[in-house]
Length: 273
Length: 277
Image 1: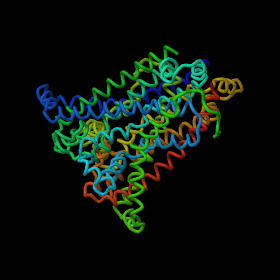
Image 2: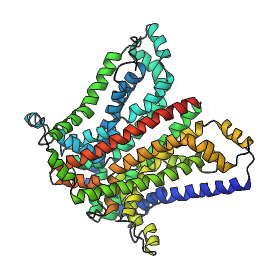
Image 3: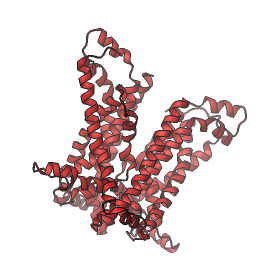
Image 4: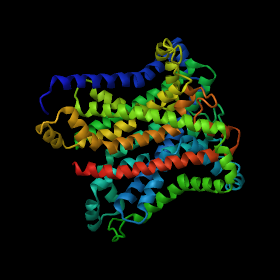
């Protein structure tokens, strides 16, 4: 670039300083406070809070909902991205808009929608009851809510990459007689590998941290329908601050692991290009 | 959209089938049941619910705080993406990775962390308390939480555009005698405006619907620090589903409108991104 003048050096200094100050106050302070607060009464209290019976069961439910949501959204993401980018059909715009709806809806409203769909006043309710299926205020509701809020995460990452790649390679392979699965495995997947992993990472982060939608659909039964974020809320509202922060620290560690994986993925994929 | 030739690529039937089936179960059926439930409601009741003073007050709080927070994010997001793209300094990689923290950190965790930071005894709260400024349990607190939540949106939409910007225009402007300030406002900034709006719109939409990080810091005083999602939540806890739905409908309309605007701007933005390559 051009020769740097004194003026632009000062601007550079100010802007970098401002950015660092902003990020330290807004992002690092919250991280530090979680660590210091959770360890305020020493390691023993911390270990006790983290290994508490209700914490462990909340952790299991969170992991369960996350794994199911990520698995189903992965299947959906691959099929949806393949449909949208490799074929021409009418109504593609409507389809992409519908897929994007879950991220624009407030989590509370997402919860409300599922309450209306499967709750007592729903037209489905008599059938669900006859089949003895409980969704609202039970584990299936939590899982459904988690799937909903993370629904487009993977397809959204895949679609731009596949669109940029075009369809020539697949067409050539198809003309040479390759089947759909072979084409996907040998030609399409190598292109979307990193976007795919990135999507899974994002989806996992959001799924394990979802609060609003899950809060609406959970009956807040300790040890039964409590996820980790909901458990944090209960502890905090009961003024059990140290345990609340200790449980939060588990989620923070998971979040940091996710961020590290994300950066590594970005680094490797950048090198490969 | 053109009605085109049949593709030679196999698998249209099955992939469309899987896509539509899953979309129906997860998104369409729930949305339809919302519509069905809405149609059963009386318009008069809906108007009565949304014009309740407490509900109107919550709309005001939500829009005000979301707007201010998104404006702060627009300014800081622009600065952050500028710093990340145009400057090199030690620790830049870490800074870039940190931007995503609000996406990765569960909102409830962010909520309790920010609350204890900004409460009167907290690290930040005690500093401002000396000047008589309360942060936690006021609208300022809500705004702080929303700034946290909306932080990545503007950066992640402006950054790629700034990276792809063709430097030859700036160089030409420089050769023609424009000073750096003029180059920024006349040459660079107009190119960033669509991305800036997209990021602002996404952040604003997210802030309006945000619940987890706000409930703890807001204090939830009726008429003062009660946000719309919280009102919906409390109606739900009283099993008043019709009131909750009435309020939710307004929010849905607003967020669809924002989505529509963002998509329009983004369509233009994509053209710029592709053209700049």
